[in-house]
Image (tube, rainbow, N blue to C red):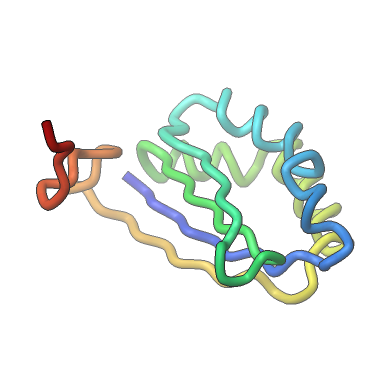
Amino acid sequence: MILIVVKFPVRPELADRWPELVAEFTTAVRAEPGNVMFEWSRSVDEPDSYLLVEGFTDAEAGATHTSSAHFRKAIDEMPDWVAGTPSIMYVDSADLAGWGPMAEVQPRG
Protein backbone atom coordinates (compact mmCIF):
# COMPACT_ATOMS: atom_id res chain seq x y z
CA MET A 1 0.00 0.00 0.00
CA ILE A 2 1.07 3.55 -0.63
CA LEU A 3 0.43 5.93 2.27
CA ILE A 4 0.78 9.66 1.69
CA VAL A 5 0.41 12.44 4.26
CA VAL A 6 0.39 16.03 3.01
CA LYS A 7 0.29 19.18 5.15
CA PHE A 8 -1.35 22.10 3.34
CA PRO A 9 -0.71 25.63 4.67
CA VAL A 10 -3.89 27.38 3.51
CA ARG A 11 -4.31 31.11 2.93
CA PRO A 12 -5.96 32.40 6.13
CA GLU A 13 -8.87 33.98 4.28
CA LEU A 14 -9.66 30.60 2.67
CA ALA A 15 -9.09 28.27 5.64
CA ASP A 16 -12.76 28.05 6.62
CA ARG A 17 -13.71 27.34 2.99
CA TRP A 18 -11.06 24.65 2.41
CA PRO A 19 -13.46 21.68 2.71
CA GLU A 20 -15.72 23.33 0.13
CA LEU A 21 -12.79 24.14 -2.18
CA VAL A 22 -11.53 20.54 -2.22
CA ALA A 23 -14.95 18.80 -2.11
CA GLU A 24 -15.16 17.93 -5.82
CA PHE A 25 -11.56 16.68 -5.84
CA THR A 26 -12.13 14.65 -2.68
CA THR A 27 -15.24 12.97 -4.07
CA ALA A 28 -13.48 12.11 -7.33
CA VAL A 29 -10.41 10.64 -5.60
CA ARG A 30 -12.51 8.52 -3.24
CA ALA A 31 -14.20 7.00 -6.32
CA GLU A 32 -10.89 5.99 -7.94
CA PRO A 33 -10.14 2.28 -8.23
CA GLY A 34 -7.44 1.43 -5.72
CA ASN A 35 -8.14 4.34 -3.37
CA VAL A 36 -8.12 3.09 0.23
CA MET A 37 -8.55 6.40 2.04
CA PHE A 38 -8.64 10.12 1.39
CA GLU A 39 -9.22 12.04 4.64
CA TRP A 40 -8.80 15.73 5.49
CA SER A 41 -8.23 17.06 9.02
CA ARG A 42 -7.83 20.64 10.21
CA SER A 43 -4.96 21.25 12.59
CA VAL A 44 -5.94 22.21 16.14
CA ASP A 45 -2.56 23.95 16.58
CA GLU A 46 -2.41 25.72 13.21
CA PRO A 47 -5.98 26.56 12.14
CA ASP A 48 -4.82 27.57 8.66
CA SER A 49 -3.32 24.12 8.03
CA TYR A 50 -5.03 20.97 6.79
CA LEU A 51 -3.59 17.47 6.82
CA LEU A 52 -4.48 15.03 4.06
CA VAL A 53 -4.05 11.29 4.66
CA GLU A 54 -4.39 9.29 1.47
CA GLY A 55 -3.81 5.65 0.70
CA PHE A 56 -3.70 3.62 -2.50
CA THR A 57 -3.49 -0.14 -2.96
CA ASP A 58 -0.36 -0.03 -5.11
CA ALA A 59 1.82 2.00 -7.47
CA GLU A 60 -0.61 1.44 -10.35
CA ALA A 61 -3.45 3.00 -8.34
CA GLY A 62 -1.16 5.89 -7.42
CA ALA A 63 -0.25 6.44 -11.07
CA THR A 64 -3.91 6.37 -12.07
CA HIS A 65 -4.55 9.01 -9.39
CA THR A 66 -1.79 11.39 -10.47
CA SER A 67 -2.69 11.08 -14.16
CA SER A 68 -6.40 11.79 -13.64
CA ALA A 69 -8.10 14.95 -14.90
CA HIS A 70 -9.34 15.81 -11.41
CA PHE A 71 -5.79 15.57 -10.00
CA ARG A 72 -4.44 17.87 -12.71
CA LYS A 73 -7.30 20.31 -12.09
CA ALA A 74 -6.60 20.35 -8.34
CA ILE A 75 -2.87 20.87 -8.92
CA ASP A 76 -3.74 23.79 -11.20
CA GLU A 77 -6.13 25.40 -8.66
CA MET A 78 -4.33 24.79 -5.36
CA PRO A 79 -1.53 27.35 -5.86
CA ASP A 80 -4.23 30.03 -5.52
CA TRP A 81 -5.41 28.54 -2.23
CA VAL A 82 -2.19 27.69 -0.36
CA ALA A 83 -0.05 30.09 1.65
CA GLY A 84 3.13 28.06 1.16
CA THR A 85 4.46 24.86 -0.36
CA PRO A 86 2.73 21.77 1.07
CA SER A 87 4.92 19.24 2.93
CA ILE A 88 4.64 15.54 2.09
CA MET A 89 5.48 12.13 3.57
CA TYR A 90 5.32 9.11 1.24
CA VAL A 91 5.51 5.47 2.33
CA ASP A 92 5.29 2.48 -0.01
CA SER A 93 5.07 -0.72 2.01
CA ALA A 94 3.73 -4.17 1.29
CA ASP A 95 3.09 -4.51 5.05
CA LEU A 96 0.36 -1.86 5.03
CA ALA A 97 -3.20 -2.77 4.09
CA GLY A 98 -5.24 0.09 5.55
CA TRP A 99 -6.48 0.98 8.99
CA GLY A 100 -5.99 -1.46 11.85
CA PRO A 101 -6.96 -1.41 15.53
CA MET A 102 -4.81 0.52 18.00
CA ALA A 103 -3.79 -1.95 20.71
CA GLU A 104 -2.94 0.68 23.34
CA VAL A 105 -6.41 2.25 23.61
CA GLN A 106 -9.64 0.31 24.11
CA PRO A 107 -13.01 1.65 25.30
CA ARG A 108 -13.75 1.10 28.98
CA GLY A 109 -16.89 -0.49 30.30
